[in-house]
Length: 288
Ligand code: C2E
Ligand code: MG
Ligand code: MG
Ligand code: MG
Image (tube, rainbow, N blue to C red; front, side):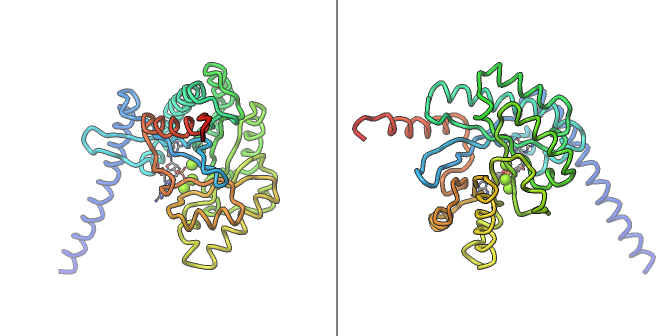
């Protein structure tokens, strides 16, 4: 009996492990194909000024429509892309596509200041020796000013190897690029390092924003991060703003920008263009 049970458990474990490895392997094969077959596309989520309620730019978010499994979340396949090195070609494609879209929008909607594009850069991508050169080439090719492109690096990646990160970020800054620390508050930032990062923006993680009305602690964290950012000469984007109350509170605390379902979900380029058109016509309408 005991022996049977033991065997049974072992089999469950073995099957589970086998399934997991197989799933990951299959995901890698599928992802390789997806990159070749163009099953990937980008969505764009507006980043809004809390002061003016205007869209100042977008964050590009990669999407994968799998022919059999349907939508696969980037939270699932980006880590696999990281581990397999596929993030390098994938990341280049994301950079190129997002910059292409930005140059189209900047031409169609000449705003002052110009629209910005934020792009997520993973750890492997950041340490790849060609990154700076590749971005320089794209900026040139798409006639984009470095200061209209913002790279998002997660707090965890930035803190993983502080000296290496600082040195790469400084190189990126020579292209005039803007830099953000993404998901701030979820990793283990050392405050003594934070001021050494040549970054323009902190993005407060959604976890704190979503709880800021429930607990005083989370409200205090949000308030402290905003004050800290300002003290270090950085501005703040609040992630995951879902309610008017959150928006009002963040604005009152001096947070400059918001991003979240309250303003808009991530959109296909066509829908984002419609939003931009409305905003642009309002601004340029002499009667408004
Ligand atoms: P992230 O960079 O922090 O992106 C924000 C995530 O929050 C996105 O999830 C977005 O859809 C979601 N979000 C935005 N507003 C709200 C809201 O109000 N409520 C809720 N519940 N969620 C909201 P998504 O697109 O699933 O991406 C997840 C993560 O995958 C990203 O987190 C980023 O770390 C990674 N990722 C996505 N696209 C890329 C990419 O192109 N390159 C790389 N390297 N990573 C990416
Ligand atoms: Mg991001
Ligand atoms: Mg984020
Ligand atoms: Mg996040």
